[in-house]
Amino acid sequence: MKNILFVCFIFSFISCGNDDFLRNDLERQRNNQVAETPPEGLKLKYKHGLFSQQFFYNTNGFVDSINIYHSWGYDFSEKYIYNDLNQIIEYRYVLDDSDYPQAYKKEITYYNYNYINQIVKHVTFDGNNDKIDSTTYKYTKDGSLLNANKKVVNGNLVQDALRKYEFDTFRNPYYNIYPKAYRIINYINKNNILVTENIYGSNNYKNIHILKYNSENYIIEEDISNMPLDSDDHRTFEYYWSFIS
Image (cartoon, rainbow, N blue to C red; front, side):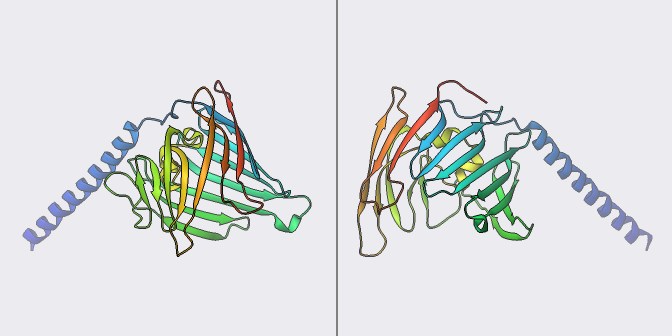
């Protein structure tokens, strides 16, 4: 009986030791992480179109908030909250229009990360603090999202269940303003779309994106062919030429 108790004690000691080791190892990984810095390049200031956007930046160089104006009168705002590793841990979304108070909408999304800077889960609550969405993310060995319906090559979504895409070789301005983990789960492309090809059903067609660039090879104007009426088919872009927080 004493031998049995002694063996149980040894296994208990080893188990506690392993737990302590794992906790310490995770803590070491956390302490060894370095705060992410934004990609080099111009920062968006305004995007004008059916949906117009004005961009503001955090002192860490990533986007802090976005004011969005719809030409039909709706106003939106987006706010991003960061931790000390410059990971987005909270996203706040508000739709507010004084002419249509019944359209008011507020949502808050929280993000959880693993120790290799990947978002593993998000949970969204409405203005009444009721959970309205929860998504868990899994990844492939190359760090892309595990999604059979979407194919990513060189940082660009080249195909989904409905469309194929072709890209230029210049930087998509939206790529510069978000941290990597957030870019990945939202499929924010590294480059600009040149062709969108519909592959769903028998109604195959292409949207051609006609792009104009500034001297730094950032898009300043975009026109998209074969778009329906009242769509965001003409856009212009303005930039901060030096970082402004």
